[in-house]
Length: 531
Image (tube, rainbow, N blue to C red):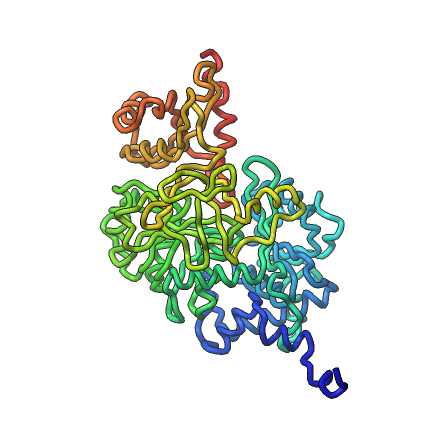
């Protein structure tokens, strides 16, 4: 190569800035097109895209000014706040990894995550100070810089002071498409939490796919009430709305009155809630007959709902498609989503594959199964994780046969709809028969007295495992075990009927609302001790 041609070759950074996929650039592009659009609403706070972009640059410069290097990890303990989003996008633009901490974990579990990740910096909300400081006592030695927001602190630990110290100049550093942008820890339902490493490309492709699914645009408004430390809210809802220049309305959890006010005030178009949250609304006398016409998409997650509850939700949101979305942290959700035309005819399915996802069913030997046959759900697509942190054996297991293995059992029908059967680990093996816990749970939830159900296997001398159900009753309802067992006998095969039903006030849950079945199994393990 001649000296002249060499001088005309663009630098690595120049080429990177032209062609890269960087999650931090999502805010920058929106600021170019709709600078005055409101990006984030949090209570009385409003942040335009122009302001958002400036703060991302400032914080990114400030973090690098602390001495952080490419792909260092910044831990983040926060409820749904504007500071969380500024920090996330600043890390992305600076080539750092953002680690939103699962606030449902206990302090010693958070300490494990911080050590496992070798986090260098912690940014935390003052309201969480007690938990954060308890976790830091057993945290990693690398974590020696902590910044607080939302309350009093020493000047050198003030997040706002850190933010103000950064430059307004555009932050331009080399960041590759498959560099890691986020580290999310799974809930740790059976062992230590597992760190899921997700790239800029994966998050961006999932965001674009979800933008197509939500059909959102610059005037669209999403309500973000579930925790942002979970991929469902961060990647499936917040990211697509920011990609298209829409607005996200942040609330710190779900409360029927606050949520209703937010929908009315901001004319929310899209919302994702858990089935139990819709149930709280429907059972509250204050909302009988209330409608919310601005909603175009009322999504739910975790599990299908009985037809009666779906009908009531449709009446509350008369202009909305009421659809289920599914996915998992490891394969940046959503991977499956019900199509509007299936919200009644295939309400018990997970829907069909999203735009960037291939979904197939595989047997234990690695053979892909034809439609109608049951096996494990496997995925392919650019939004897959780069791997689990520090768990090479788990990575090998998850990516065998050239597909990502979900651990879920299902079949796919002629329309491509995915009929979820159960988690492999949640199938109850009773008397030589496999019982899908979700089928029994659905049956129980069809009883008007039952709000939620969780089915597990309990050790049994005769059956190996006995089907056992725990149920939470709907407000103001009462029912006895015998009546519920009789209800199941009417609708289920004999071997699927629970041998015992325990009525409880609430279920143990992870920070993202998932029922912790391993705790329920422990609670019922001696139920048939004398059998």
